[in-house]
Length: 116
Length: 239
Image 1 (cartoon, rainbow over the protein chains, first blue to last red):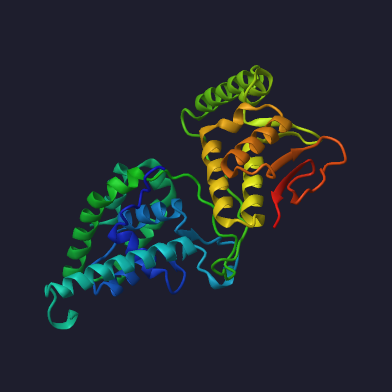
Image 2 (image 1 turned 180 degrees about the horizontal axis):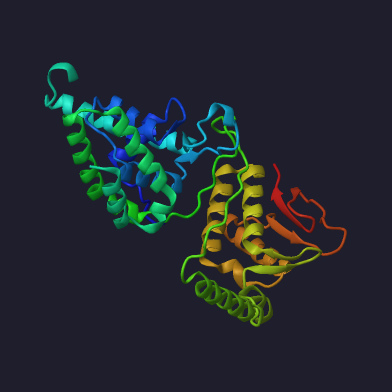
């Protein structure tokens, strides 16, 4: 089996999956959502954003919405993206992996203060 | 960093990336320029873009940029519900046609080779000892299946449980050693099974019958007869 391009899942790709968990977004909205959910620590530039989006599309983890449908509700100049079911599963799996890491870090008393 | 400079820098990205996303990328920069005004924010934007170009290049060159099917519409979708999509045209990879040609020739050659040679099964039938044996009305049947049927019948119906287990174990062991695969007909197999069972039990009332034509059963002189197939029966001593 060929190695997947997103294995391991890069942080940018994971953040994009998370940003699409609640609603369909266009590129700029994804960038802003990622900035918000990381408390400003990650601001995706256009290169990182769209190369990650392309990789996620190729892996079937997100879908680009057809702009011909529902045009009234959509800004036609922009491409909108939606989280696919495979992407949701992968995001859940990655979150669980990170949760396991967090448990270990807590057990080792590496985290303090608000994180604990 | 002005939009013009970024357009120039985008040239180091793959042409497919520019074809797909250049317009979107520039729109994103325009949006940020509109939203992030002020000296410090503009400096931050410039650093972000420089860092972005350097960091994004490897991923940009790893992508294949094959057309990915867009979702059919903006209508809601539900997880687990199958849906049909139309795959858009995707250019053939370099080398795809030669690879397909080689695979096709290999498949044809394999098919011709297989068709031109008898299968191992047919060879075994024609050349002698083998596992499948000639069986009236059914063509060929595996001797192992018959042995298993006889063992099961003896285990289930014999009154002497200890002896029946001993007989069944012996038959299973000899079956594993291939003793029953040397026979070629069901009649020979029935005789051999009878011989083995009697050797273990020291009781001549045990018998495995084979009969190609009716009547299939022999008279039961103090024995119970159990038919295990249309032509095969097992006689066990009855109390």
